[in-house]
Length: 373
Image (tube, rainbow, N blue to C red; front, side):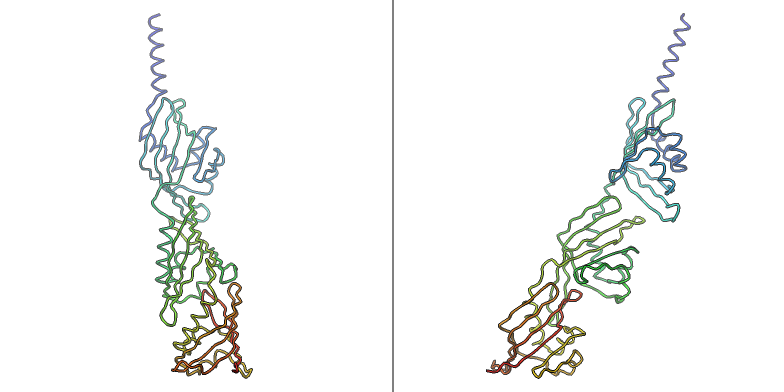
């Protein structure tokens, strides 16, 4: 009887020891090593049938779906940090941070993911079975707004180099100036090497999930005028960002005019530039298909203006009537030219047509008729 009791006690002690085998840091590292070596083998032999995975972004997958990921991706490394192990009898919960790298089996493209994790294991017959996992995006200090600010700085330094380096191959964009039509990365071919710009971004708001981010803000494009003054153009801009091979890339862009400029102010700016240097004004502000109709009813284009010898003038417009729709504006009124004594020496009734192209207002048409007193 005594021997039977002793045998029974040893059996109970052995069972309890087996049931509560410590889950240590080494235990976890060995599991990660086996998983990295052959994830499909590990999942088929060391994972509970009712395993559940919750990924970054909130998607849920059972064992079959989770295993199928490794038909696409091959693990190359797992680096864990901040690991905390909590064991409660036969159950163990491990939390921490993991930076794991993969290679796409078909394309060979690398992928690096930095995530926080919670893994749950249950001991069964001396083995620790993987029963659940959850990942969430790790706080990595990368703020999309700061990345876009850096992009704008690089764009200002060299626009072409920026687009070549930062745009994805399938980059797509649209804006107000091209009528909302889509265009891709091919536009880079038309840019000049080393061409600088002068732009800034403000009032940003970002939305980020995993390898995708969207940043919205106000872009101010500074355009230097003929007289050296600044004529800013503001747009509401949306940047679509995608992380590829651990690098944020420029995947999409859309902009629209924030505020429609007052066409009357644009015309006043035109007159100011014209008064300073008419020839320079015509060369800078006239569109290539500009057409002028003089008081005799004769037509001429931009080429004829090259022979204009006027360098300074003192003129002003009055009695304005403005018709504006988006990027097109038509003005009618009176244009007066004065001599040094401020006496009006010429007065014409005019119709001026202006069109905004690539963010800049251009002089597209002019028609004069002499006003007789």
